[in-house]
Image (cartoon, rainbow, N blue to C red):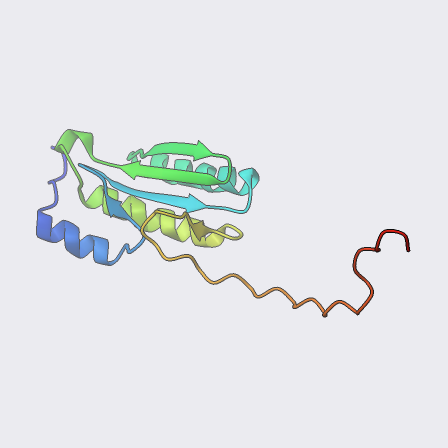
Length: 133
């Protein structure tokens, strides 16, 4: 028997524990941003291994350094505890990958970037040369 679909209240409570995930129709979804394609693939590989272990497979869209996971329990016609568990595990995996950042528009605020070292002011006369000089 398939797992029970979450009620609206159960889903809202679950999403409170997954602030970067959003309800997308009958699924939960999050876009992850990584430093490069290799980091994205490292993340996808670990998510795939977990999905195989629990026999619950999300839709995965890879766009270079961005990975979007969409999880729904098709047999139940919507979102179940299996999708919530997969989302939590994906968040844990992402935290272990170098430089995961929420993608713009994913519903999550971007994490503050490290401040760059300020450049020293230019010295007078170090700009462009004047014509004829």
